[in-house]
Image 1: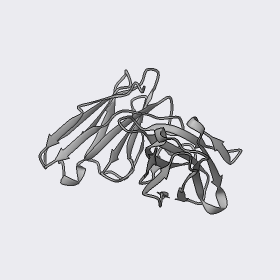
Image 2 (image 1 turned 60 degrees about the vertical axis):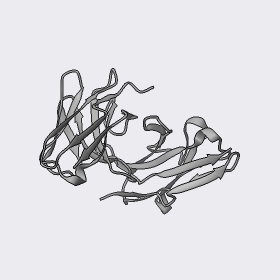
Image 3 (image 1 turned 180 degrees about the vertical axis):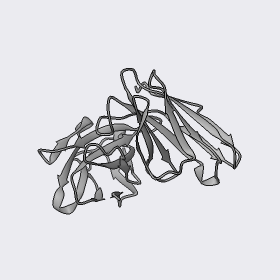
Length: 114
Length: 113
């Protein structure tokens, strides 16, 4: 069965710092990858997704993620974080189309200090 | 702002009881997925309904069942509640399967005592 690991449970950064949140998955076949975000008091929402093609995908609010197949990784990055990026971030993996079981990681809580 | 709504917001039940949670999908969405999120964990996929049929199921026992109605709203039913069923239950709607962007509701917090 596929699984998703997010090794950073809580990350604290100052504004303008660069961000990289790790995500690794365990599955040898074709995968579809997602990052979802939950801002304080709001619902989970999609940040970005990768299905195929360019392994560097761009999402909302200046976030991007790079799919590295050889490392089974899909790390989330942002060059300069803002206080408003404080949120919980979840990586998720979906096996190829037809399998509806979206598997989430345990999440990373990001706190940005002004 | 997402159009997915869930009711009730909070619920307290006793072990062995049954519970029904409800979800109204966003307008134009024909697919509803249900997730269980325990404290400190990510959402775990329970099952998905597409056009009133179950269309995928996670590793949950049969006492977790669901329905989807012609207007695409959905119910999650849990029988014989156990203490470990205490969690936040999330509903998400989309225009297709899980590969499509899922719009999540606020969740129902279930406490089993």
